[in-house]
Length: 240
Image 1: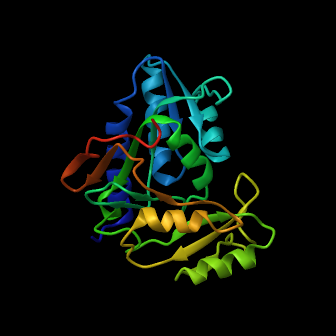
Image 2: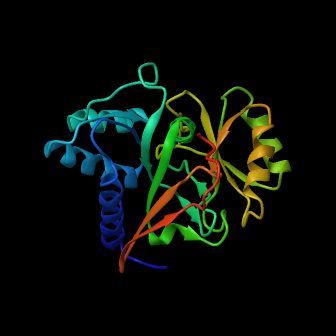
Image 3: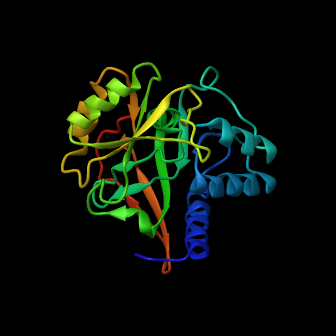
């Protein structure tokens, strides 16, 4: 699917508004990170101005700063260890399973902590993010500790990935909110995301990876036809 940036932004915004309509009074809301999640944060602020009352738990310092600037009240896991509903974006959504690749915004560890703590994880994307198999278009971000990242990179390459250290626009290694590095790992089309997630997680030096398997409950997809909602087949939730 090809589209221009303005259309893509409009589709994301429409999906964000649909997802934010699920928020009700008194909820603890997980706030995602990235360009798509930014639309959700603005939509939450708009609903708050019409009387909705909720508390947010952001998945990054950037999202926390934006939410605070818009007057959204924030809380922490110390006070609210369970989240009612999280709204976040994704880099790829696999048709049928709703498995995800996330983390191109650089906050995958905190995003996964928030997702697993949520009763419902709602994903918002534009139609270009749908794929038949994960890995078709996106690398898997893998957060690793800074010490020995070169050795960790070698172990990821041994799994069959082409691995690149993520850098900032000025060429410096990207640093996550937790002080870690990100290795972007291209595996191509992934036949078994759950098995690959397990293999990556066993590598010493890996903190977390951007495969989100069995976590998304609903996906709102914006495209030229409007907004479509996909729901995961009934079954036990990983975060339950």
